[in-house]
Image (cartoon, rainbow, N blue to C red; front, top):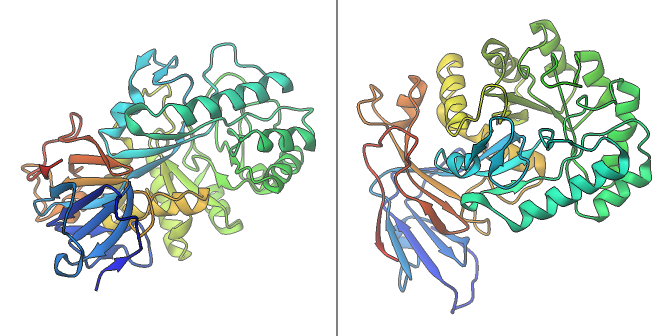
Length: 398
């Protein structure tokens, strides 16, 4: 039996059939028993077996050729600045290149690399609003960049957070990258932000850029931000006993990033598993950074964490999609009726020793991406960045 919702008869319809494996992005049911998705006007209308779905009169038909379809990956921690350029490495098209790695949504942890970044309250608010507006209107490669994340500074009052929220700001940049470096001060501002619907992230570990400082477990717990930003350090991690303390001492998001300490990241994942709280684990790259940008960073995180921690690959995909979407209150990251059709078509990389895509990931290989779709629109076919997939989907009609 397929799942369906009504749609206007004049809407544009895409039929995706012959899906080999469908990953939902949801921990409660990571694998769906379905081989067909019907998309109408960019949103998922039906999910099910082909015989049960309304496949007639499709404006576009895609034969998945037996590959795996996952929700679009979400990078929970990036530092955008201006369009698709980063001054951190003076690199162009890093966001579009990440789309070729399956990333369809990015969350800003602060536009901290902006040359001459304003630190006065009027300037930081204006900069955040400008970034929020710019990325709302411009989507490099189709990627949905949630930006406009101000780094809080001393002297801010409740009215500042209300003003930003009224203007569309929904995120705070990493707490600790500005002049607010005490737990009690951060806690008050986090509370004001939360009151007005603004989600917060706190820097964890050693300093990463000039002006940042060492943030230990005590400050993280006192500040009570929504997300423990790069719990495995960006780059230098806290001692493992402090990371365990953070996992056990609060219920906030546990963010593991590519540009951090791999041992610390694996340890945080294991602690979350022991606690039965994998729903708290989300993945990011923390790029652009001194390590550069990582177009395949999220796929590499999925593979590394799955293979070294013996966590099923389909579970790690949930950490890179549905977990982040739920934590950030986004409508993406899950393959469900009514949600945007942000989809990644992937298969086992050619010559991988794994018997199938999930086994190959648990053996440490990253998959090959054969197509990326955002809001029902095909944004790329065979990825220029991943290894070639054994099979790739085919557009029969468009």
